[in-house]
Length: 146
Image (tube, rainbow, N blue to C red; front, top):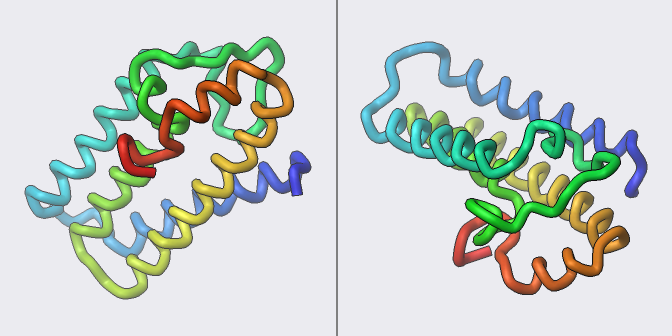
């Protein structure tokens, strides 16, 4: 379950679900609420990237060689702020034209990102005693909640 193939499958599923959501909602003008939610998620993602170096960042749930544990900025509150950013942005897309299909795809995206987070955490737990302590002090994906 912790093979590299599994990691690539999770990334593929993530992009398939994001693509389905965008295709389902088309390129029509979103509501102000949907646009605001999307922009808040995107802004949070940019803030997260500012806290992490590009050489440390990895879209695949594998730990890069010489990766450093980041515990500042957004990472001070949640262990996977980029996943949170993606979820908020895609919630904005779903809100723009809510359908049963888009809600279902969104739930599949949530599950996929939680599986990616779980995979990453297993790897970090095996690599870093500092991560075990960090894990106890922060939430996984949703600040102050989960």
